[in-house]
Image (cartoon, rainbow, N blue to C red; front, side):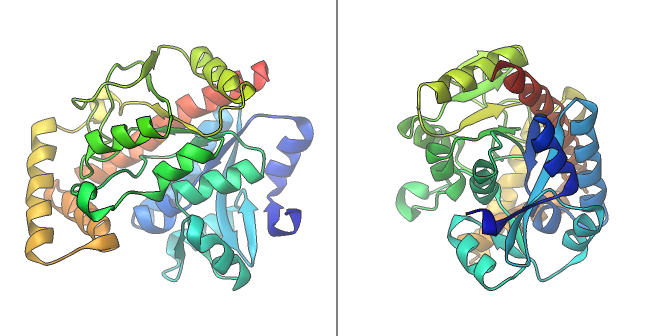
Amino acid sequence: MEQYITYSEEVLEAREQGKPIVALESTIISHGMPYPQNVKTAREVEQIIRDYGAVPATIAIVDGKIKIGLSDEELEMFGKSSNVAKASRRDLPYLIATKQLGATTVAATMICAELAGINIFVTGGIGGAHRGAETSMDISADLEELAQTNVAVICAGAKSILDLGLTMEYLETKGVPVIGYQTDVLPAFYTRTSEFAVNFRADDVETVASTLKTKWDLNLKGGAVIANPIPEEHAMDEQMIKNVIETALQEAEENHISGKEVTPFLLAKVKELTGGKSLESNIELVKNNAVVGAQIAVSFHSQS
């Protein structure tokens, strides 16, 4: 196993010194945001995690290895390169074997984090069940990963381009706890609320950390969703986002866009129709998740 994993200097040092480490994905850099905002955001998020007492480990596939922690130059490379493959669970073996550049999705980052002994992972939002998934079976690999991989995902919920009700049903079936951080309802990424209740509410990071520790002490396999709403001042108007998404969905249908092309199309459309405001919100919610994620990691580490 170890022949496939390599660590940055900073992460190696953190492992040796027994410091809390927080995993970060790389798809958000290569596919989630335009350059240079992507690299700038990645650096800022890493710094927030350091400021709150943990060590950031951005994960990616480089030169036939899973790289746990990226150098500044590597962050820049992932931000600028156009030939970076999007790596989910099914893609990892092929991309590693063929020594391609791969940016890890939520699912792949969870797998790599667990291999490296990292339990806490900060991202923007998770994937979910797509609208119409009851007939199309279009369900993100993120949900299946949460069912079997022991990593907690701190996120701002799932984007409302998805079917949030079906997403919650799927997670319930798989026994994945959805913990609302200072909220009773599932946040919907750009907005703070949705009509769906979370399973449990936690008002402090200690409660989250001790819940995670207990879960894994009991050998209850799988991750957890820590749903952390976007800060009030950066949230978007719920009705406006609803209208924008309806318009985008209609356009996707008219243009016969389907399968894995749907999400990038919808996100680009949402960005266009909100005049770029959705990108600003995206950046702010990731930073906010980094604050909470680092605090959870520090608390979890102190209890372990």
